[in-house]
Image (cartoon, rainbow, N blue to C red; front, side, top):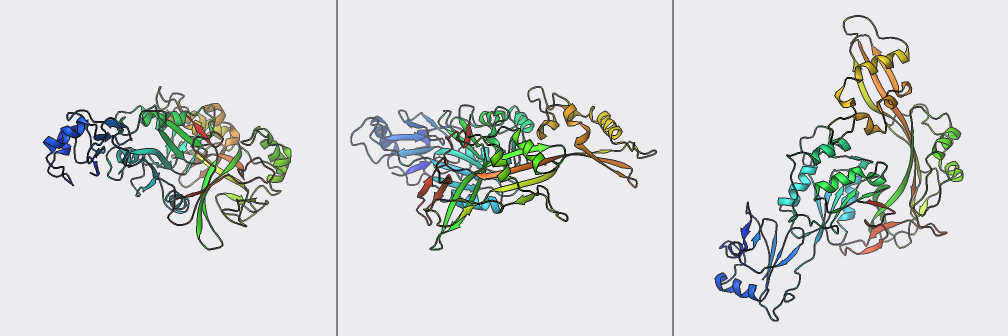
Length: 477
């Protein structure tokens, strides 16, 4: 007999009703006689969607939509081991966007063994959609192994919404905390996701696991998925790509880069000043080797800011350095280059309208900051207990500021007075500098750590260096 997937039921139902249904295909002959006989010799096995395996001992045992039932042809030996597992669990990957990065990641995971990719449509890319599909979606056709969520990300930030009608399309820590403690979100049950620590929710998004704030973001995700699961997230930049071999067949790869980063409220004057900033972060590699002045001098270019006329959002110097050779089994000549990046980021904007009817704003910069401070102090989002006592996370903490006073420092702000609209535009800015270095082993050859698959449909690994449970690459909660 085949394995049956239970569907179409709105509540738990006795297994006798499900297996005795006239709509079952293929039907079980004489279910009133056959089912008790199979139960007597342990010939029926019930799998929850999460893959939990239970030998059916009573026709009154309940099953739910999304569960699986294996019915043996017969019982030769009897006992609990008479029936083998009909199929293994599948890892389900949710692709939370479209375009370049997402397309390459989707192609990568489509070559991964025992993996099913679920690309979500625009307007459906949300945490709600993930949970609803896991609980009731027809796309889940086997027991669930790992749940892998692929998204653009940063520390305490995912680039998709909590619900399908989320206006911002991002998930910050305060929003995630409110969602966890809310009463309207979909609820994962132990029938859906095994309530054991060996069940992994793997976030594939850059820097989510960098753990500066004690992994509170991952702990919140852990609560969403049943609290007893394990949540892993990258400590570094996680990226995907493809390389043509000499036979022109593409090898899909995943690799990681260190993202050594500093931010400043003012521009660094020159390379020497920027090196001083980087020396202050006490960086090291995954092998425990301290990053020192020699590396910063080598990795930071002489020109640290864009040339005149540059109009892009981010200044990147991708080919400034010698590359890292990827393993010969993947490509005989391809390099992965280091990068240096700079961008000025407008992190918060606010309009002062005090002068709409008469007067003009003060001309002195510090006086403008004082006028802005007086207004922002009353804003709900700036209160220390925003959005709630359970989730204190005022807006300025999204941008790495420890206090309102630090956020309001005069050097953080630029102002623009529009005499026609009589609005003073106030913008908080920060300057971000980053060097991105491919992660390699500690050998003299500095081999790139990489996951890669054979071309074609074999779903066979060439290399599998980056594993979700390896705490060099992933933070594990």
